[in-house]
Length: 229
Image: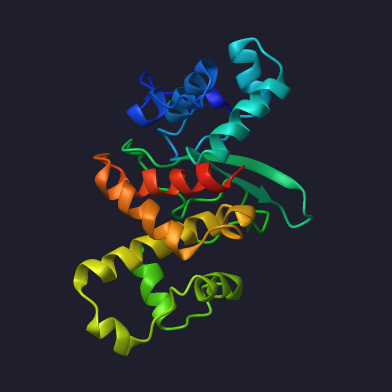
């Protein structure tokens, strides 16, 4: 497929990206380019070579820009392998932004390679209630390693205890677990190995008070910024 076939006229740079001092101007620009490319399929399959040619830079430079956007949680990179284990395609999804795509990451899609059995690195993205309900049921759809993380952070509760909790506290628990689950599925192992229960609760409270519309996105980036170094 030709990357140019999925470019829309408009691109989007939300305030969270525009005013992030950690991002270089070029990284903000390539972010906006990715939002334009995701319009048709809900993700961009453009290669580093494509971006390099577009902005007259090296593929190594593009790789650094995209990796930084991924590290800060603005995009999600998914690698698709074929049955032989070779990388067949890279998909870039926009994350943590009010920008609305036609397809939401990473919902089902029509495979463009019906001859191959696709191997996706990341789990289906559940919504907040889905993740919480699966955990309450001790579902095998949630990996054992993630249960271990929740147990270590003391975020696993019995139904009896939940029945005694106020609705706002349960909602807080759901949202914290959901953000941890997103980090877990985005391979932020080093981050999750450093976080503490007290720090998570503190960062969550700050995210609720900062006035940002996308509070969960702010919460997640706060965790990455604090523990990602």
